[in-house]
Length: 562
Image 1 (tube, rainbow, N blue to C red):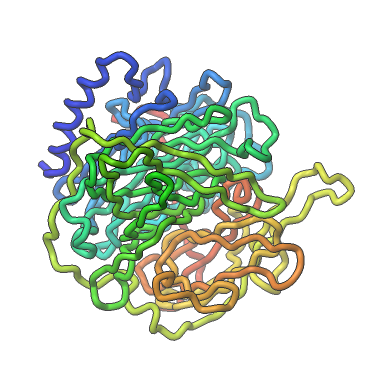
Image 2 (spheres, rainbow, N blue to C red; image 1 turned 90 degrees about the vertical axis):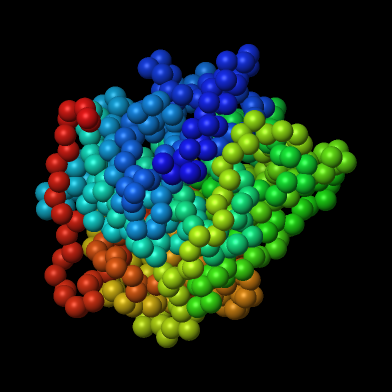
C-alpha cells in the first residue's frame, strides 16, 4: 500500500475517534444531507484523500445537491464511502478513472446560455438542463478528447452515469490542481455551491528539496452566496468565503482554527477554487506579516523549467491568488511567545464595476498538538527528468496575438439589463460563447505563441486556458522580474480605470505538448464565463491536417454505476 495512503488510514482512525466527541462537525454525506458542512469556528482538517496504486487511481463520484439552513443551494461530489470532495493523489504517468453518477434531480431546460451540441460532437447527453454536470480537471495537461478533459460537449444529466479515463503525462509537473463542474451557464452556481476538490500530482520534493519531510496542509478556499443577500459594499462582501468547508460568514466572520506545533514548518497547498472571489493571502504573527516560501504556483514548482531541473524558492509576505489559482508555500508556525497568529486575505480592489472582496481572517493559528499529525511528505526519491515546459523562455514565438476582455450592457437604455461579457481576438467581432462557435484561434501542435491580453473593462478579469500552461513575460508592456517569470494557467488582468492605456499581460503559451483538438480559454470569474466570456482554440496535429478535430461520440448510461 502507498505509504502516504497508510498514514491517511491511521489518521482516519484518529479522526473517527474525534467525531465521537461533542461539537465535532460531521463531514460524511448521508441521504438526508448529501453535502454536509462544518460549523463556523471549526478546526481545519485536510480533506479526505484517495491515492493511486501501481499507476492507477479509480474513484466513483456522485454529484449531489441540497439546501442549507439559510436557503442556499449546495452542490458537491461525494465518494462511495460518503466522503465529500476527496483529494485525488496520483503520480506523473498514472491513469485516473473517474466514474460519475449525477444524482441531482432532473431540471427544466436551462436557457439560451446553456451548452448544447450537435450529433457529431455528442459526448454524453446532447442537450443540457438545470441538472447537468461535467468535470474539468483544472490545470492538468491531459487530452481534451471525449472521456478525458473535454468540456465543450460533455454533458451528464440527471440519473446518468459517465466514465472519465484520464491519462496523465509522464512529465506532468508535481503540484496542486483541482476539479470542478464546467457546464457553460451553470458553472458559477455549481462552484458557489461547493462542488470542487483538489488534485495533487506527487513528487514536488524531487524538485523542491526544502519540502521533503514536512507535513502538508491542503487548504481549499471556496466562496458562496452571503445569507440573505445583503447589498455588497463597505464591510459587506459580495461573497462569503469558506476554508475546507468551514464558513467565514458575514456578519460574524468567525474564523476557522488551524493547529500547528510551535515553530513547525509545514507545506501549505492552497487552492482558491472560488467561483468569483479573489484572495491575497498573509500569515501574520502579532501584527507582523510572515515570510512565505513559495515553492509552486498553479501546479508548477517555481523556477523548475529553466533546464536546471530543480526548483527555486520565492520569498513573499503575501501571495495573491486569482479565482482558480493555486499557491504552495512553506509556513513556519508561531513560537509559543506569539499572542495572536492569523491566516487572512487582504482586501482586493477589483475596479468600479467589480465585486467587493473584503479583508477577512480565514483562520486563527493555535500552537499545540495537531489532531491531524500526519500527511508527511516523503524524502526526495528520484532525479528529475525533462520538465514539461523546459526551455520555453528561450523559444522564438511562432505567432503573436492580441486579445481583449470587454463588457457591454445588453440594452443601453436600461442600465439594469444583463451585461454581456466577451473575450475577443483583436480585429475579430466580439461574440458571446457557444460550444457550436467556430474556433477563434487555430494553431498547430509544436507552436509557441506570445499573447498580449488587454482588459478594456472596469473590473478585473482572470485569464485561464485549458490543457496548457503559459509563461508570464510582461505586465503593461514591461518585462516582469525573474521571480515573477513563472508558469501559470490562470492570471489576473487588472481593471481599466476608464482612461489611458488598457492594462495587459503578455504570456508565452506552450503548444509543444501532446494535446491536440478543441479546447477553451476564458475569464475564470465564473459569472463572467457563464455570460459569454469564453472562446475556442483548435490545435491541429503536427502533420498540419486541416480537417475538423472531433471530440468523438459517446453515450451515457441511465443505470447506476457498479
